[in-house]
Image (tube, rainbow, N blue to C red; front, side, top):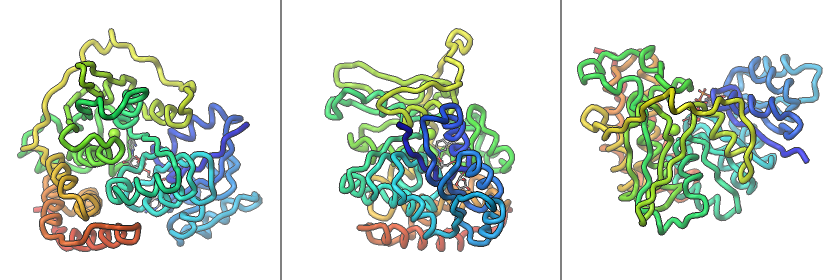
Length: 385
Ligand code: NAD
Ligand code: MG
């Protein structure tokens, strides 16, 4: 029987990769809800192709265009944050959480409350909500399957093993496009240079995060919540080829790693088919052609974001949500030409050092921390020198 699926953030990079897999296995799936931010035309095209039950744009202003583009179909069109939450609550067997940023938190939580399978790409939601989200997963009997390539790799390496046998978990990092740049060069890095990732093709925000290494910082916190082995057992290593997607070391000296091409369809397929496997169009690894896999320690002097993230998760409370929100504002300001590249992480540190919000106990608390940190971060955004 066909499984039902909703894709939150259907028009994005992860959304497109997910729908590409669905398209190739059309009869296995029934599409329930597809959502986007403001791209009504793009969303309507997908909703028509996949025969979605409902299409939702987050931006109210895009509703007339969505209605027009869906005229003559019986696809329900809706708009706004509440409509996103309702779409996520429709109870698909599997919900792909692929909205970028904390904007995806409320719909992801709504899907969790329905108790199905959540294929989580939206790391910012888990970083911000932390225990609030993992507690909801447990309370509602939902299943959280990581789509982020590193976490999907770790999930696969942990299969059949006990967490208390884990000695350490090592997240690999490509190091991003500026891996070998000096601080002086980093200061002058442009948005166009930052979004040009050497190995992966991704949305603009995560590409900038990858360039600052804040992506690895967010992933460190994501791993902390997904795999509770303790912060002192989590490591980061730079691996420029992005072939080893992460590894788990066990107490007996065995290290299990997951390898694969730098194509998000691999981890997405792993989550969609879990605990089975499905075909993807990705070419198998040709290790002889790749020749070398190299590794080196991260440089936290040039890329302090991972240190900030480690400290934020150790501090706990409001710190991770504050860090994430400040980073979202700073990345948007950098992409808009308002601040220098190196100012992104500095401003996140500034916001963190001034924040005094209490630990969140529920979704509304997380949203309040997020809003407060955004307001503080916006005050800091000054023009590029
Ligand atoms: P993207 O920018 O390509 O797409 C984002 C999607 O979210 C789009 O459909 C967009 O319309 C929607 N969206 C944006 N702002 C929104 C808002 N305010 N409200 C509702 N919807 C909104 O981003 P992406 O690269 O696909 O990344 C999506 C998520 O997956 C991010 O959390 C990212 O960190 C994570 N992720 C992405 C990759 C990758 O390879 N692209 C890899 C690992 C994890
Ligand atoms: Mg990743």
